[in-house]
Length: 102
Image 1: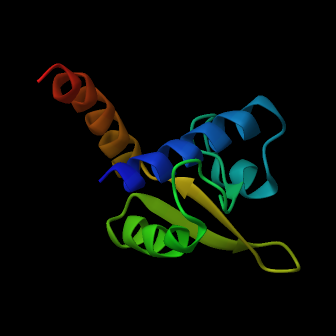
Image 2: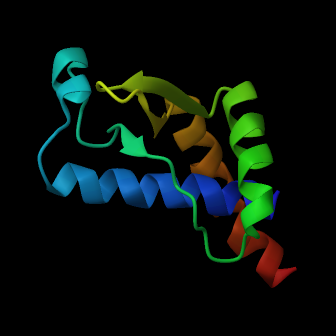
């Protein structure tokens, strides 16, 4: 679905931004590489209505494309793409040019 792609892409973009800065304590403890950083919840995704974000998060987590954990003293929820999520995003993006040319 396009809405899933938009949210997956938003997390991929957020992870790249975080990777350009300092790693979070969770990342360092788990030995995360630069392409898999824990990021705050993405709440605003262009092209996705605000009330659709929560169901999409749930679906992406259930599909194994997005992980979450509680972090810090205030139990902030942070997220990151899984390798399956990255593969799904890459497959969707590889298929997009074929669909446009059809």
